[in-house]
Image 1 (spheres, helix red, strand yellow):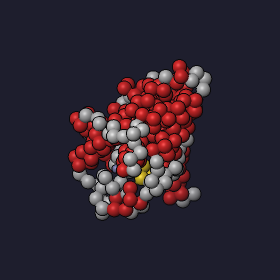
Image 2: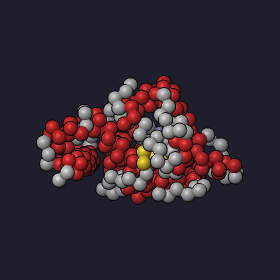
Image 3: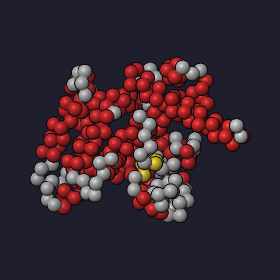
Image 4: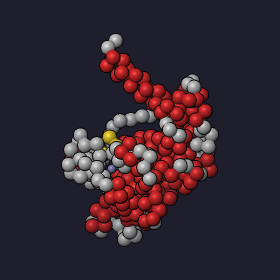
Length: 85
Length: 199
Ligand SMILES: [Zn+2]
């Protein structure tokens, strides 16, 4: 089942399909436009947690505090934030 | 063999073993659920020593999170295949149903056991759901602008659709014994949702 049709953001796992999904619109960028600056540099951890939590709140109405906890758990499993809480 | 070639070969071998573990993990989960997917059972399914698992995944939780992530990636890819400029709500629902149908057995396992899965794995489920919800929101906004649907709010719309499909998936043995519940009920669910938001 392993498929490599599109790359996932190394920070949040978001599947990046279009160049715009990548930081700075650069298809070679490792991180998505939410997690990294246009230069491709990863944003600070707390900012990335907040952006990922906001996404859960906006799309599914998850409680903000629960969304932050969930975002931290998700990030901890990603290459960029391995083991971080 | 040059030292570089040996290093490359070791890296390839490592990646192959990792993929075998993930594939075996998914087979075990499909059959036994996550509760039955011990690291020992997964190692057994690959014919490798139990310790091999931990050369690739620090803990069982890390392996479980990777299994759920793998299901999520496969479903996201399936959804993305149908991407077009401005999909209608029906297009988005169809794409989601196809992604669910392709991964029905595994995804139903994920949903049934979601609250007992490691936090990272449960977060993967919600990340995937956000992907669906965000597509629905954009298609819904376009339909709203054209006056084709009534205003129930995009979060409500997404949550109705997600809970509806999740309910059928989690109880697939009751709604479609021995068959694909998405193949059997998917188009009716889609029609019901579209009917619900008609102006
Ligand atoms: Zn990201």
